[in-house]
Image (cartoon, rainbow, N blue to C red; front, side, top):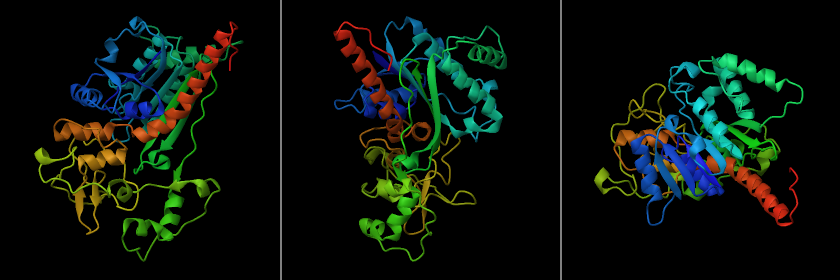
Length: 392
């Protein structure tokens, strides 16, 4: 069986999937520069990714011709149609490729599906379309008719789901997650959708492992500051109500936690170690004050129209604002240090900013991997005794 990641980008989701056990992967991405990054990191002597890279437009792929059984289809479809900073055109945006995701599921009938996208997908304006996506995943075989409007297709799916004796093809779950709650040194809210075939157990999202409250306790105790060898500030935010769950979580990881042990960045890109060089020109202005060292970073941005002045910058201990180096941004996203991003500055910024934090992807994918491993192990055991395997 094989595992697929379509719209693989620079590989953030793929790295997390491999950490969780899904490997080797088939990665599909049409952007040449992103594919260069994927090939660089999967073709090294000690590769970060065990993967085959296919530089293809998924709209042109006949998935039914793949000829192999598929365990997982993972996808981070382009987020621009639903991004809070985009044009907000959703289904009317030509970059909306959710129909291609559902087509892949329909043609491949994988054991499981894992999708990631921006929190803007949950906005009231997009609520109906998001629910339509979920309904399609529940019964992907109800395909749209040529030139059929999505709302008409949605009505047909609803009628089928309300019919007597209806059995869904997939069990679908979704959750809005913050990367900081899973050990990533960044506040990054993302929607995850997981679907498993009907005969498999229902997937359950993992509980948060880190919390703001635990960080505040850690800092108030003085341990955080002693760990980093700096003087404890006189004024610290007061901790409010602490839930029982928060008592058993680790502290949120901060910018300082993530980057403190990095060497001094190079002054020139040509002399840099693993994308670690100073980027000049940072400045602070209203609404763009930079990230704090002793809190998780703001959401790292792709910066298609230039590097943002706040999200991708940090206020250092001297009170000066500077841009993060690309290695620091990769650390804040949770990429391994040996994961290298080749190419020009604008392309590297886009790749890192658009990536799924690998650690967050791993947190979501690990219980899914275990669920599938248990299921297929039971099939093997049942088959070895010559008996039919009961649905789990």
